[in-house]
Amino acid sequence: MHMWALCMRIVHASVRAVPNHDEEDATFELAGLRTLDRRKLILGAGGSAAALAFMVNHPTRASARVSAVPADEDPFTLGVASGDPLPNGVVLWTRLAPRPFEAYGGLSPDRAVEVKWQVSTDENFSTVVRQGTELAHPEYSFSVHVDATGLEPDTVYHYRFATGGHLSPTGRTRTAPAPGADLSELKFAFASCNSFGAGWFTSADHLADEDVDLIFFLGDYIYEYPLVAEQSLRENAPEMPSVLSTSTGSLSRYRLQYAAYRLEPELQRAHQNAPWIVTWDDHEVENDVWGFPDDADHVDEMVQRANAYRAYWEHMPLRRRQMPKGPDARLYRRFDFGQLARFSMLDVRQFRTEPLSGSSIVDSPERRDPTRSMLGRQQEAWFLDGLRSSPTQWNVAAQGVLMSLLDTDPGEERAFSNGGWDAYQASQQRVMDTVTQHEVDNFVVLTGDIHRNYALSMLADFDDLESPRVGSEFAVTSMTSGGDGTDSNAGLEDRLRSNPHLAWGSLQRGYARGRLTPDRLEIDYREVRYVQRKGAPVDTSRSFVVEAGRPGLEDA
Image (cartoon, rainbow, N blue to C red; front, side, top):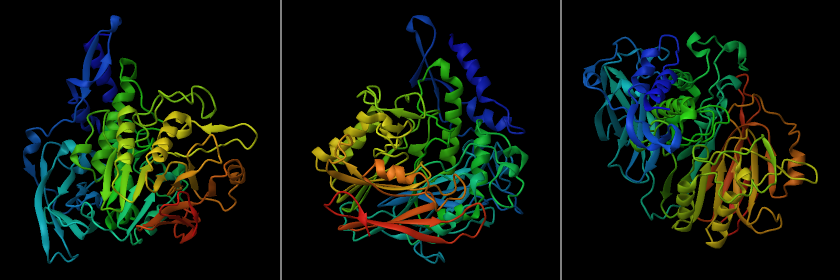
């Protein structure tokens, strides 16, 4: 295939129409046709290669011109957020969208908007310690990502934005402690899986009331499905704008999906309460999407992934270094909190080896193939090296899919989910071997994806269920996905019987919170009994502890 033909395929794929938003798509997707990047596509016979990349397009000269937001319309409809805290700074986020379901949020596509920001030690902003001005560009959907530096370590701050006489809501955030600091405790929460149509975001409302320093979101912040009241499990679900009645795919449609989620007041409150550290799973792109080859047979998938990644970055409190270059982004990163904990945020979707066929697999040479990796060679090396070199008391991996073995066959045979680390047994075992052989202190995994709560002890060798414990894994249920939970826990009895390292499971909805000290980790599973109607209270359904120096978990 010639380069011209390939470019035409990309052009046609990238301007898939969403009503009244074709121009918005074209701004990024057509301007994204550049030459020569490291992601090469094999073109034509004889192995001849040409290079093509989807580069993040920089603001144009036109958008460098500044305009004001309408005086009578609130531009901060999508709220504010903070994330990725460091000892000297944190990311502050907002997006201007006075009319969220219109192209560019109802703002001019060829004018930037000046946005002021402030950081204060008090919520009345009587002591402003940092402030500045950013341009919100249409190329980035008028999102603002301020890397607010020069802050003090381990300090609570309040922040806000202003433009055109409008003032944003006030957010609360906190910086990480100084390197090597002797930290007495860290309070955090973790959650995953926000299906808009599966229920109300009651769990997020309760999460906003938790006294935590940090929130980990472990994937599926959005789901790609149409938002139609008739298909919603929400009781008294309102009619949604017609532009949301199609599945995502184009850049503008992904942006609309995030706008719908970000308009939810419960999610806004949860973001305002504490800094978030986020990763994605599959639904930010499409159900069960995996990494795939970069060749001419996957142009449509590459375009969709580029669109999804772009919209994700635009709507999350991430630094510019996480900005995707087309269908490529580095979302895995590391955070050290003094001497207490090292957190490794993993990306378990983008770089994994092509999956085996079928949703459920049995043990096989293919499952154990040492060349297969859940993380990809580069990320896996980075992760294992981070475990070996960690200077902290606790070592925590925050990621999307179950890392521990989970036998799903209640009988004599073994069966495994194709979506988890079990399908990449050699990669799974390399992590366990690193923890064991290098005596990694207090290894803990936080996991999302599976729409149920699981608490598991991790073993040195999952082929030998009597092998020593080397860590603990806490999988958190969905916030809404799957609709109302159930008290029956049907089927979990078989899981518990087949997996003696599995301590507990639940099919309710909610999130989890943790308290980490030098001596112990405490985990509380916080559950709501229903999400399809509003108003469910939250309760702690089960608590576990991990004592420092004693791998595995125990009842609190």
